[in-house]
Image 1 (tube, rainbow, N blue to C red):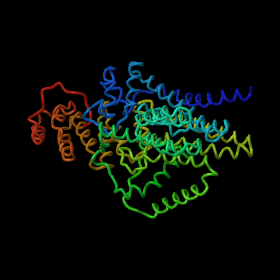
Image 2: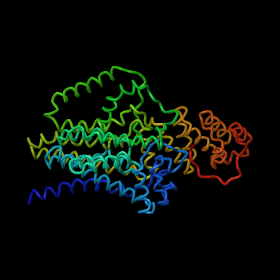
Image 3: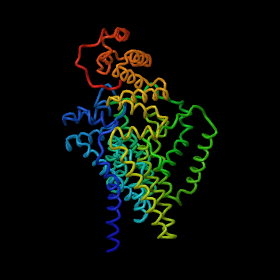
Length: 504
């Protein structure tokens, strides 16, 4: 009777904790990328556009002129379903994120049970994963669901391997379709199968074929990732050399998740150094040790494999729009939770009461931080002010807040923030253009014209867009504005009507 109760209560407790910690996120609205991807996306308003999710760029479905080079049809389909189920109410989108996270936490418990062989230890992994504060960006932010869905389908694919092989392959494809990082299953499936299922390696060629098929489809639909021209891209040898150091930063974030930031920026490397040699040396020594003794430490090998293979797609070798982000840790944190639970098992065998007291203390601290961090994501203003506070050297943080305040009519503060963004990132053309808009709206025509010319020299070349931007309407009678338009091949501003404001 007791064992049956434990079997029922522990998984429910893990999933319940995951849901409970994000209840206050349900009051949040649409923020940041949620606005163009969901709230202002006209394509979501009719289910007739649903098939377009399979043949469209992730951002291009909302605005074909803003293609990102990402292909995530599974996530887009969930946006369609949520939009029509909840009539565009953000509560419903947040509820879906909450449920997805609860399911992931439950799957972590089940996977840990297979890998570690103890319900108590598996519950420790589940509780740690459910409460970890680093997940707030992926769960409390609607657009962060890409990482949650990729992890959900990947975990389900691993658990389905010993029962329904075809289902496992289908879930793997869904994981990749939620986000490209789901491709980790191509390596995680063989690792899990050989360590815990004893399956022949040749069976896993099908996961590689599914991965190859997905990337072929992805390339035919969206091509490569489109990065802003000013994005620094170090040479390949330098990117490879930086991998262990970047992994170290990610692991430290998992160990000490108390300084969370929506703009977690790690500077791109500019030269090789002794630290790169040390990083690769530590990685090589650890790999050598595990290769020698892997049969005695199957759980450690699987946990480390989950951690590092989950980090592989975001290791910086392939340039991404965001070089680092807390949401990237959602999948790798499964390996961290499994490794932590494995270590906790030793304390459990030595001092049972102490082990549970330590686990309770960590989960309580995690929970408090998670609930507190959720409040940051409740609306645009709260998020952007918190990000500027936590990332004072981030140009994008100042740009986001400045652009938000510009839309609210707070021109002086917007100008100050946009100028700060430009000082932090010279050549930031979007910030320069919005600065011109702010001056124009304030009525400072001379500064607006000068700022607009600088934006043109930085690469803002869409004369028709500039001519029809309502923020620049006060400049239409100025001959200098018409000279600028002629330089861009436009005769003059149209009579109207004008579209909504947005940076180019």
